[in-house]
Picture (cartoon, rainbow, N blue to C red):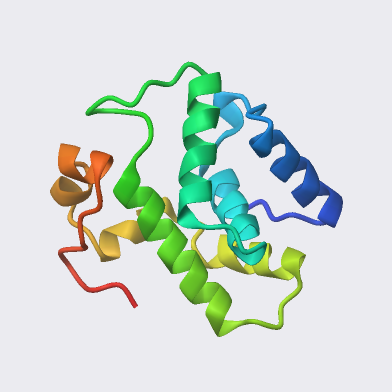
Length: 140
């Protein structure tokens, strides 16, 4: 999959506005957008709870129910929020645009999570509805 970066602050603002308005159609709510929104929230001093609430609101607006097989996933959300915050802490002088693109570059591969979790653990019902710790290596 091709990595598509953001080129302007306006692009970031548009994404953030659409997210906060629950106006991103499901086909456009991809890994890139998840990472970018979480990065923007964390840079802006917002919390995991804010990210969670926003994703759940967007899912609801798109008619996506959380079931054992689909919808909001707590452990994946917490994993990425943690990894993003860790990345941001390592480069505190980047501009907002640079920080988002740095996160996208570092974590473009959705499969990165499997360095920390086995497939069975991260796809479990327990992981979807609550936090489960990684079983392959601890988070940094």
